[in-house]
Length: 191
Image 1 (cartoon, rainbow, N blue to C red):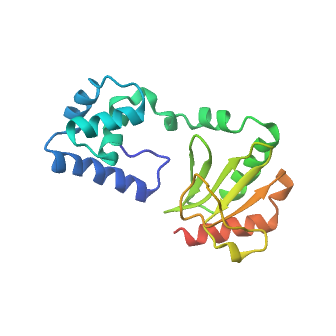
Image 2: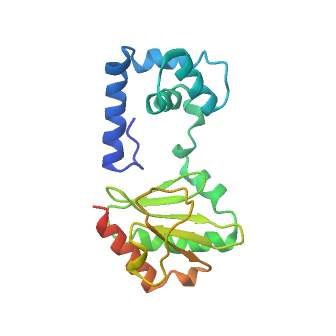
Image 3: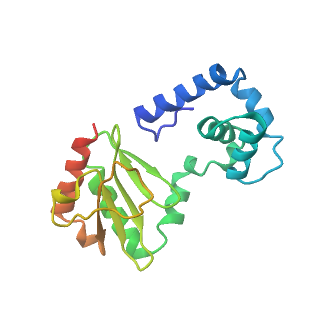
Protein backbone atom coordinates (compact mmCIF):
# COMPACT_ATOMS: atom_id res chain seq x y z
CA UNK A 1 0.00 0.00 0.00
CA UNK A 2 2.95 2.43 -0.04
CA UNK A 3 1.92 5.74 -1.54
CA UNK A 4 4.36 8.18 -3.17
CA UNK A 5 3.18 10.98 -0.86
CA UNK A 6 4.08 9.08 2.30
CA UNK A 7 7.34 9.43 4.15
CA UNK A 8 9.60 6.36 4.26
CA UNK A 9 8.58 5.94 7.91
CA UNK A 10 4.88 6.00 6.98
CA UNK A 11 5.50 3.48 4.19
CA UNK A 12 7.22 1.15 6.68
CA UNK A 13 4.29 1.57 9.09
CA UNK A 14 1.70 0.58 6.48
CA UNK A 15 3.80 -2.39 5.34
CA UNK A 16 4.12 -3.58 8.95
CA UNK A 17 0.41 -3.02 9.53
CA UNK A 18 -0.47 -5.16 6.54
CA UNK A 19 1.99 -7.88 7.59
CA UNK A 20 0.62 -7.95 11.13
CA UNK A 21 -3.01 -8.16 9.98
CA UNK A 22 -2.77 -11.78 8.85
CA UNK A 23 -0.41 -12.75 11.68
CA UNK A 24 -2.66 -11.23 14.37
CA UNK A 25 -6.05 -12.24 12.96
CA UNK A 26 -5.42 -15.41 10.95
CA UNK A 27 -7.15 -13.84 7.92
CA UNK A 28 -5.61 -12.25 4.86
CA UNK A 29 -6.36 -8.70 3.75
CA UNK A 30 -8.45 -10.09 0.88
CA UNK A 31 -10.56 -12.10 3.34
CA UNK A 32 -11.08 -9.03 5.52
CA UNK A 33 -12.05 -6.94 2.50
CA UNK A 34 -14.73 -9.49 1.61
CA UNK A 35 -16.06 -9.35 5.17
CA UNK A 36 -15.97 -5.55 5.29
CA UNK A 37 -18.01 -5.28 2.10
CA UNK A 38 -20.85 -7.10 3.87
CA UNK A 39 -21.07 -4.39 6.51
CA UNK A 40 -24.53 -2.79 6.59
CA UNK A 41 -23.09 0.57 7.67
CA UNK A 42 -22.12 3.34 5.27
CA UNK A 43 -19.91 5.63 7.39
CA UNK A 44 -16.28 4.90 8.30
CA UNK A 45 -16.69 5.11 12.09
CA UNK A 46 -19.83 2.97 12.05
CA UNK A 47 -18.02 0.41 9.90
CA UNK A 48 -15.08 0.40 12.33
CA UNK A 49 -17.46 -0.22 15.22
CA UNK A 50 -19.16 -3.01 13.27
CA UNK A 51 -15.80 -4.71 12.58
CA UNK A 52 -14.81 -4.42 16.23
CA UNK A 53 -18.16 -5.57 17.63
CA UNK A 54 -18.58 -8.49 15.22
CA UNK A 55 -15.00 -9.58 14.57
CA UNK A 56 -12.80 -7.99 17.26
CA UNK A 57 -10.85 -6.01 14.67
CA UNK A 58 -9.34 -2.93 16.29
CA UNK A 59 -8.83 0.63 14.99
CA UNK A 60 -5.62 0.40 12.94
CA UNK A 61 -6.33 -2.94 11.32
CA UNK A 62 -9.97 -1.96 10.80
CA UNK A 63 -9.07 1.30 9.08
CA UNK A 64 -6.56 -0.49 6.87
CA UNK A 65 -9.19 -3.05 5.84
CA UNK A 66 -11.81 -0.37 5.19
CA UNK A 67 -9.39 1.70 3.11
CA UNK A 68 -8.82 -1.34 0.91
CA UNK A 69 -12.47 -2.43 0.84
CA UNK A 70 -13.77 0.98 -0.12
CA UNK A 71 -10.87 2.23 -2.24
CA UNK A 72 -13.10 4.56 -4.23
CA UNK A 73 -13.41 6.65 -1.07
CA UNK A 74 -9.69 7.53 -0.78
CA UNK A 75 -9.55 11.30 -1.08
CA UNK A 76 -5.81 11.44 -0.32
CA UNK A 77 -5.12 9.79 -3.67
CA UNK A 78 -6.35 12.96 -5.36
CA UNK A 79 -4.38 15.64 -3.50
CA UNK A 80 -5.17 18.37 -6.03
CA UNK A 81 -8.89 17.95 -5.36
CA UNK A 82 -8.28 18.09 -1.60
CA UNK A 83 -6.14 21.22 -2.02
CA UNK A 84 -8.82 22.91 -4.11
CA UNK A 85 -11.50 22.05 -1.54
CA UNK A 86 -9.35 23.15 1.42
CA UNK A 87 -7.89 26.39 0.03
CA UNK A 88 -11.02 28.02 -1.47
CA UNK A 89 -10.48 31.54 -0.12
CA UNK A 90 -8.12 33.43 -2.50
CA UNK A 91 -6.27 35.12 0.37
CA UNK A 92 -5.75 31.88 2.26
CA UNK A 93 -4.75 30.15 -0.97
CA UNK A 94 -2.06 32.78 -1.57
CA UNK A 95 -0.71 32.18 1.94
CA UNK A 96 -0.72 28.42 1.30
CA UNK A 97 1.24 28.90 -1.93
CA UNK A 98 3.84 31.06 -0.16
CA UNK A 99 4.23 28.55 2.68
CA UNK A 100 4.34 25.63 0.24
CA UNK A 101 7.14 27.26 -1.73
CA UNK A 102 9.12 27.98 1.44
CA UNK A 103 8.49 24.54 2.97
CA UNK A 104 9.69 22.78 -0.18
CA UNK A 105 12.98 24.68 -0.45
CA UNK A 106 14.94 22.06 1.45
CA UNK A 107 15.11 18.78 -0.44
CA UNK A 108 13.37 15.59 0.68
CA UNK A 109 10.01 17.23 1.46
CA UNK A 110 6.76 15.32 1.14
CA UNK A 111 3.53 17.30 1.06
CA UNK A 112 0.34 15.58 2.19
CA UNK A 113 -3.17 16.98 2.21
CA UNK A 114 -5.79 16.20 4.81
CA UNK A 115 -9.39 17.40 5.00
CA UNK A 116 -8.53 20.26 7.34
CA UNK A 117 -4.87 21.05 6.69
CA UNK A 118 -1.83 20.55 4.49
CA UNK A 119 1.30 19.02 6.01
CA UNK A 120 4.98 18.85 5.07
CA UNK A 121 7.24 16.03 6.21
CA UNK A 122 10.73 14.77 5.87
CA UNK A 123 11.06 11.60 7.99
CA UNK A 124 8.53 13.18 10.37
CA UNK A 125 5.99 15.95 9.93
CA UNK A 126 7.69 19.32 10.45
CA UNK A 127 4.97 21.80 9.41
CA UNK A 128 1.26 22.04 8.75
CA UNK A 129 -1.01 24.82 7.57
CA UNK A 130 -4.76 25.17 7.92
CA UNK A 131 -7.10 27.93 6.74
CA UNK A 132 -8.86 29.96 9.41
CA UNK A 133 -12.50 31.05 9.20
CA UNK A 134 -11.89 34.78 9.24
CA UNK A 135 -9.29 34.55 6.48
CA UNK A 136 -5.62 33.83 6.68
CA UNK A 137 -4.04 30.62 7.91
CA UNK A 138 -2.47 29.02 10.96
CA UNK A 139 1.01 27.53 10.59
CA UNK A 140 2.12 24.75 12.92
CA UNK A 141 5.80 23.92 13.30
CA UNK A 142 7.87 21.18 14.93
CA UNK A 143 9.55 23.72 17.17
CA UNK A 144 9.04 24.83 20.76
CA UNK A 145 7.01 28.03 21.28
CA UNK A 146 10.03 29.72 22.89
CA UNK A 147 12.13 29.28 19.73
CA UNK A 148 10.89 32.61 18.35
CA UNK A 149 8.74 35.54 19.44
CA UNK A 150 6.21 34.87 16.64
CA UNK A 151 5.46 31.38 17.95
CA UNK A 152 2.81 30.39 20.48
CA UNK A 153 1.68 27.10 21.99
CA UNK A 154 -1.01 25.37 19.93
CA UNK A 155 -4.55 24.94 21.19
CA UNK A 156 -6.78 22.19 19.77
CA UNK A 157 -4.94 21.83 16.48
CA UNK A 158 -5.77 18.88 14.18
CA UNK A 159 -2.22 18.09 13.13
CA UNK A 160 0.59 15.97 14.56
CA UNK A 161 1.49 16.32 18.23
CA UNK A 162 5.07 16.88 17.03
CA UNK A 163 4.07 20.40 16.03
CA UNK A 164 4.59 22.19 19.34
CA UNK A 165 4.28 25.77 18.09
CA UNK A 166 2.04 27.77 15.81
CA UNK A 167 1.80 31.23 14.32
CA UNK A 168 -1.04 32.98 12.52
CA UNK A 169 -0.43 34.24 8.98
CA UNK A 170 -2.71 36.96 7.64
CA UNK A 171 -1.19 37.49 4.20
CA UNK A 172 1.43 35.98 1.88
CA UNK A 173 3.75 38.80 3.00
CA UNK A 174 3.80 37.22 6.47
CA UNK A 175 5.77 34.35 4.92
CA UNK A 176 8.98 36.32 5.26
CA UNK A 177 12.61 35.46 5.99
CA UNK A 178 11.74 34.69 9.64
CA UNK A 179 9.05 32.17 8.68
CA UNK A 180 11.36 30.65 6.08
CA UNK A 181 14.07 30.27 8.74
CA UNK A 182 11.55 28.69 11.15
CA UNK A 183 10.41 26.24 8.46
CA UNK A 184 14.04 25.33 7.77
CA UNK A 185 14.74 24.85 11.49
CA UNK A 186 11.69 22.59 11.81
CA UNK A 187 12.80 20.66 8.70
CA UNK A 188 16.27 20.21 10.21
CA UNK A 189 14.71 18.57 13.28
CA UNK A 190 12.57 16.16 11.25
CA UNK A 191 15.28 14.08 9.61
